[in-house]
Amino acid sequence: MSVYIIAQLKFTRRELYDRYQSRFMGVFKKFRGKLLVADAHPAVLEGEWPRDKVVIMEFPDDAAAKEFQNSPEYREISVDRKAGADAIVLAVRGL
Image (tube, rainbow, N blue to C red; front, side, top):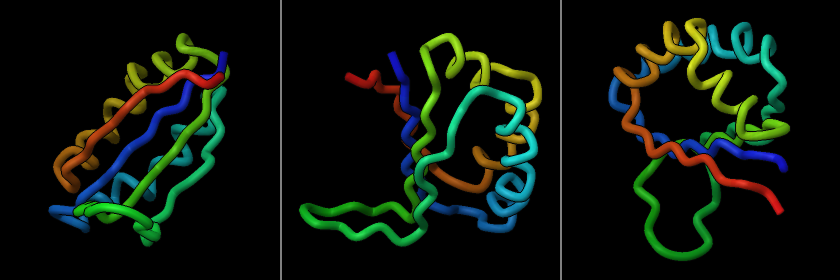
């Protein structure tokens, strides 16, 4: 069953987030994930959304999502993401 990681970001130090982003695909491509969405200007259709960006990644299963999330390579670059953006990150299962 596919697992999706959804991140909702509010930039706090854009230069640090940009450094993370410049390294992200080099790390991400080593795993079995697929980047589906990375939208810095989503259209809010209902309600309030005080964030700047949405990212959605697809993995073939929970194990693959955890492998990426817990990898030393991702943890190393995620320091800049955490310093550069306030994030809500969810893992959800597909149907």
